[in-house]
Image (cartoon, rainbow, N blue to C red):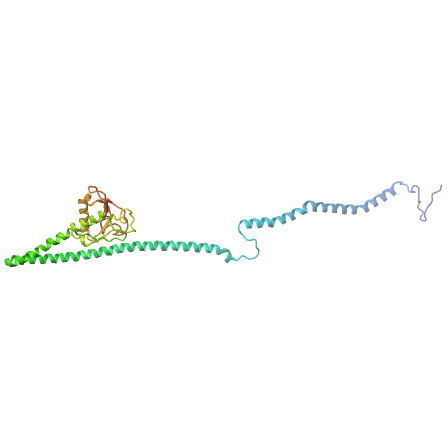
Length: 308
């Protein structure tokens, strides 16, 4: 059968008329592949984008959402507020200022208490010193009066040697007066200043003996009980006496010597005098630590503790 041709003269069926039978099929295959390439590229790009979004896209978002809660938790543990904006320095520093003020107030109160205690201690020492000075003044006045009396007695005796028998008979009652005074002195009771009750009986008896037998001891202040003493077995319990001789060290020595000579009779436990301590009549004096002033170191008074 003869082949049909189109208007353009190309065969509509059968084999091609050219000398290369496969050139027509190659040309049409290339054209189809060229048309399909953009669609393949677009599909690959889309699939890659979807895969990247699934694998990577959700992780940063999750981390971004978790970060604020962790930050808030840390701030809460540190006691910090999670607010934003400028910080109020005054309100933030107020707790520190309150703490500093509290410490300052406490320190001031402690200082004031220490100063008050020091003032009270000094007042006691000043009072004792004033009493000692007053006792020394009274002693000096008594000595002056005694000297005047002795001079008057000597003058009277000189005059009596020249008196008539009648005058001698009149002088007899006057001579009996000193003997009566001595008899009265035998029953003398020493005056002791107490501020925490009475002293023990042994202490009162010892004071009476000292006042009777040590010249000048009856004109000084005797300090007995007081609640503020540091030794509970001494002044607070009524078993100690302070013989306030002031600057009259000779009188203090005489009082100490009398106690040593009558240690057992007076019931002496120990003696403190001029920053030294004696614990037995045949023992030796032991030096004591410096306590500060003359009264604290017993420079102006012998301190005697008696056995209860």
